[in-house]
Image 1 (cartoon, chains in turn yellow, orange, red, blue):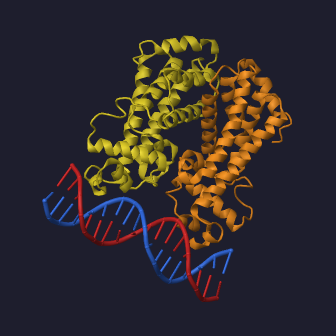
Image 2 (cartoon, chains in turn cyan, green, red, blue; image 1 turned 180 degrees about the vertical axis):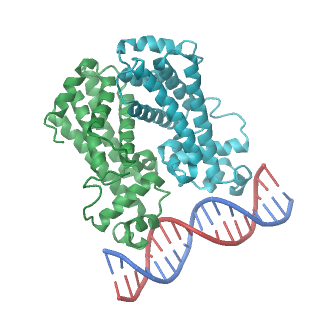
Image 3 (cartoon, chains in turn purple, green, red, brown; image 1 turned 60 degrees about the vertical axis):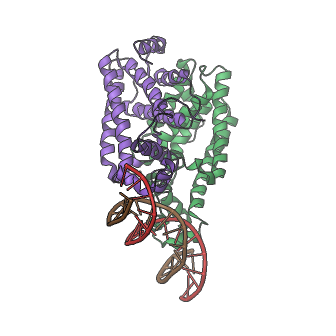
Length: 215
Length: 215
DNA sequence: GTCTATACCCGGATAGAC
DNA sequence: GTCTATCCGGGTATAGAC
């Protein structure tokens, strides 16, 4: 069922890491509220109070997962921005990166975005990180529209749609469909086909996006 | 914050309907497991055991919400199929219908799809209804590809992306962004721009989809 | 760092009066 | 159909020994 990349299985994780891994999987399938600290401890193979030697609370486990994911995503968008090539290539690269990232991370990050975890008042730090990420993504699309690369779409709506597709990607990686390398291109193609002002540019953009792209 | 359509507020709902409405909203924001029957009762304005005069369990409240939504969706897809016009027009009409439906329903249906509620063993009936809906949606896309209307996309992947966009639509309607009439077209346009083999047909399809379409 | 034991609260659901 | 009262299991978190 699951992909067996080195970073997802094997390895000798610390107890702290194993708590994060198992908690992310349980949050994803049963929700944050639907997962008990007993469930997490059982999955890790320790007793329930042991969790509290590593994390202050159940909430702080979720907060660490949110922090890691959104910081990585924002960092990737920033890197592709500075690599240049224009909005279309930046967006294509980001989509490739996201698919690869979701496949290789040992965490199942669905719960963060699938549930409205971030709308709960106590997750204000996560909300702040998400706003930062969203503004980076939206600025790529806005630049694409103003520079004439993209059609005259509403950047906010396009940003929402791209986010929805990313979530669907996370979902698919996590629920263990095989997921070949071609899939990343298909997803990026779907988005770019819709956004590009001249669709004939798609092939050139795909090629350029892959150039100097360390798989 | 919220839209004030007649079907969403006002009206004199029965206690049973009010339970469904408030439960759907709480499930959407706090998750199924994160919502207690006491929360629901408080929102409705009755005492907690009163819920059990209308529903056998908390689960059966969720089941009724799932049933209503998926039956309506499958029914719409079937109707547009028999109305004819070809896959592109069927899909465009369905997307318009979905946006309108999400705006007018008094229920907040995010929880059904956002969380993995349907992956829980006890929701087997809902899973069956979802599979039926998915196969209808996938057949529209498959026919579009085989008849040459659509590009050579993977129907399964395209179906997943369309589902993701529908969910984002539900999410957006529910979280109360204004949502004008143009938005429905923009969403349908985004999907069809990416799928259509010849993008120049988009305008004709939009016009045809709106014809004999009772707003 | 991990364990056992436990405090204390809140969850779903039922009984039975009105 | 709605109420009050209540059962009991399971929830998070802490105390303190090893």
